[in-house]
Image (cartoon, rainbow, N blue to C red; front, side, top):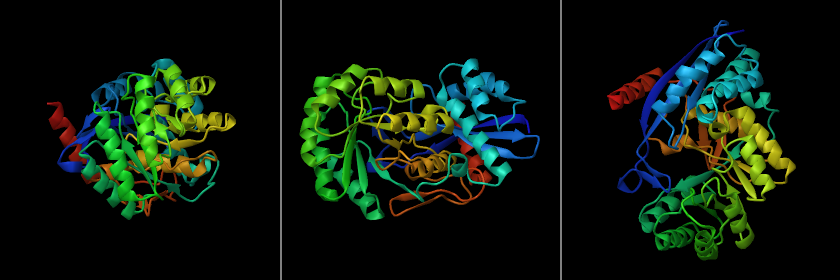
Amino acid sequence: MKITNVRCVPVLCPRKRNFGGATRTALGVAAFSDYTVVFVDTDAGITGLGEVDSVFKRRGALLRHDLTVALVPAVIGEDPFRVSAILQKMDLTLDGVEEAKAGIEMALWDIIGKALNTPVYNLLGGKVRDRVPLSYSIPFGDPKDMAELARERVKWGHRTVKVKVGSEDASRDIAAVKLIRDAIGPDVKLRVDGNMGWQTAKQAIRVIHEMEKQNLELVEQPLPAHDLDGMAEIRRNINVPLMADESVRSPRTAMQVIRRQAADIANVYVTEAGGLLNASRIFAMCEAANIPCMIGSMPEFGIGTAAQIHLGVAMTNLGPDSDACGVLYHQEDLLKTPLRIEGGFSYPPESPGLGVEIDMTVLERWNKAAEAAAH
């Protein structure tokens, strides 16, 4: 089997508007998801699906440029079963841009699963659990509105709530965490995510100590990704586990976090890691270091979310509740049959490959929106 063509379709999908406006975190404002849907065609008549997602500075048209100019020519003619070799070839062709590589790589797993008539989770070692427990993220807003949204998500079934903090107003963050704890009660797990928003370890430690009064489960990525010394200092001086997110973007950076003792937990992404293979490698590395992992979200559409769920049910080192529910943060999804996400859990599709099929009507509408925005 050979790859004959790779089609990269730009799409623009609106995010859900919480609190009457666009979603805001320490990473900035996100009113839309400017992503790319990838179709990898083969000479066997099998097409694999992938998506390219990013909330970082290099996203949208920039990642599509990386795909069309460098990565797509590198994979044409390759055997899609040779995932490791293709990933290595993409790495040699273009450094970084893991999100673009992930779009192609997850499509390869989709092709292999379809060819072998088995779900992707079986290609990753098979199920160790039937479903993935979920966290839900609460973006910036008025603390009372944030608390009400958290209450609603708990009623929906989530047993873990993540509060976005790290804003310029530490007192607002502290107040929001307290009101949310009051709203969700003592039995729901409560975590906070700094999204690299604090500038120094001392600043982060001071604010975290105030938030710890609300019985936090963990604190996620308080400092910029490169500041592993600061992360290690925070870890030594707070009373709850510290989770690395943006600091863990590849097996190489995961090893640096492990060596520097900069985290108790790792947040692993399919997209940030460059695909399912690298994500599973990070899981294995962390397991050897006795560091549990969870799965993070950009957030993804249905294709990427399905890839997350396949990973989640197959990894032995899955620890805290994961963010494998990116579709819930968008106003609609592009799948013909929605993923099963209910009662605070995501369930893997059972059809071959990733087990998803695109609603072409939605895809065309999103593509027109992306083209209009580009002009």
